[in-house]
Amino acid sequence: MKRYHFLLGALALALTSATGTALAQNNASIRILVGFAAGGSSDMIARQLAQGLQQELGQPVVVDNKPGAGGQIAAQLLKAAKPDGLTLYLSNSHTMAMIPLTVLNPGYDAAKDFAPIGLVAVNPDVFVINPSVVGNPKAGLKEFAQWAKGNPDRGNVGVPAPASAPDFAVGIVAKALDADLRSVPYRGDAPVAQDVMAGQISAGIGSVGAMLQPAKAGKVRIVAVNGTSRLALLPDVPTYAELGIKGYEEMIYTGLFAPAGLPADLVQRYSTALAKVVKSEAFTEKLSAMGISAASSSPAELAARVAHTHKDWTVMVKNAGYKPQ
Image (cartoon, rainbow, N blue to C red):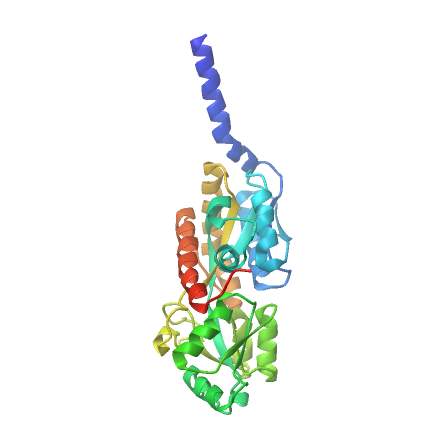
């Protein structure tokens, strides 16, 4: 009888550990939630990722756009999903680290409710100006700051969203350079780029992907990049730190997450497949064309990055005197 119960217990353990593998081997579709509308950079990354994961995992992978509230809607859906490996979430650091600092009840706790799978990309922000508005085709960020001092009420800087890292960065730049700058929130960085090009606003902060083509066309000038080193794509553009501006080093990241409680074997299987896709030449080239750098990590490394970004941005939000709403 004891041996019978022992065998039953061993069988139960074996079935439990195999659950994730069994799910991963069936033909059910895996959906990747995206918290932003189709056509944006997050959506484009997700579709490239879905194609690669489908090949690596051998089962259908589909993108499910759930836009709204800066990614909150998709994050809440992930929290509510079963940890069976069939629902994943491609999220950025704004949703994971900034919203919990600026929203009173975001509806999720990134550290408790999600299981990190791995890093997918990093997407640095750049500060751009309209040289025609400033009246200096070679103006850098410091020259722009001086121009703004002499042109009251014209130092408007477009940012992709209110209470975002770029929004707070305007205050950091203004304080460091003693400049009269004000952030102007938009819905995404594409309209920011359009208004800077049109001269509706004198400057903006947005992703490399949104600003690179306007810069190549000579319609905007990229004068600073966040991060700890210059971009290979923009070797002549200094970092904020090089210009004496500290506090905006953390770059936006994109990572893949699952609901908390995902079986360990599935976490590892998905992480291994994800790393292969992200490191592939095809994926890297597709992202590079959008001005985005592919980047991979282990689940533990992504968890550490989420925590580090949250810590850095806690200081940023506190220094800005912003109160969660």
